[in-house]
Length: 494
Image (cartoon, rainbow, N blue to C red; front, top):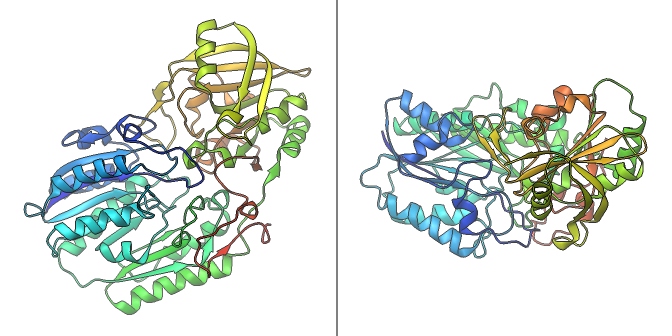
């Protein structure tokens, strides 16, 4: 095959008022900068990215790839019309009518919202379908948190979705997309089915490592289909298609339909099994104070996760552990560029009154003031060591580790200049901080941290503190959900 490949990724948090601009896609963050042409192949190789997995599988299959572009921006608010139109236009213009291609693969997210389009991926696929030959198959890969509409499904010939959260299988998903495209291109009989599942599941309860989601994903095994996948949805979008869904591709329509029905029944059976538990910050601090086991407790500040479009700067959990005079606590990542710059000016060993005021961006973010000491500095550029960002480089900007002394010990806090989800041990170890040596670790992440931190933890807990990524859905008023969607908001907590 001659395959055009491209990627345009954004997870849009509709509660974040900050627009995502073109520059956010152009510059590197946890993923590479905007890549064009052959740089798409070179710049993503060996990374845990769908397009990287697709490329590797296609090269093994001896197909010819025509890379167009690839870009992603850190999750945040609505994608500006200027950014959406600029990137979409470049992609569409390069593909044209598709006369020189046999097939198209797109590495998308599934929860992009622009100023104009409530479903960015659907808008892009509409425009693409309007200009390419009808017989050209289009296969896409999507994030596990995609909010998939029936029309997006119908606009594609094949659709593959991550199956793990933490997302350890992104590259494998791209490889599966290639295999599905190859099957379609060989013109073998293929029937497809799509079903929206009327559940909105809080993100912290979506981990596929254990519990209800793990049980639901077991239904994908041993199904009589060519391909089947599940999306769990993204709860920070108040839109008609915000919910879980499933897709199936099979040799008969009956097999495809039955597989989606089986997945829907699994959701029905597991709806009361999702662990929606959230500790309050005071309980987390008290548990830290009492903890005496050799392994640390890990607390996740799930609603202030930069990886879900939050600001990564709220201080409620920090204030609680400081006021309880906890000792041997490691916390991160807090995004305060001015504070990081001040720490770099003072240098290692410098002492100063630290002001972490999150109310500048979010009135519910809180303010923390205390005497601190700079114990380590970094330019924030280093290789990740974990599986989620496998093969990638961190780009956190000027960063610092600050120490706050309490009556019983100390609290170490990592400050960055660029927002980054705390999900990799290297985000601490590159500053000389050894997470295993602390009594408690507090991370601003929702689930991705589990891949790296759960193996070193005594116990892991999700904590409820204010933030822009809603996990306690009982506190959210949705106005645009479909009427049949059931919001799992704590009534079923175990």
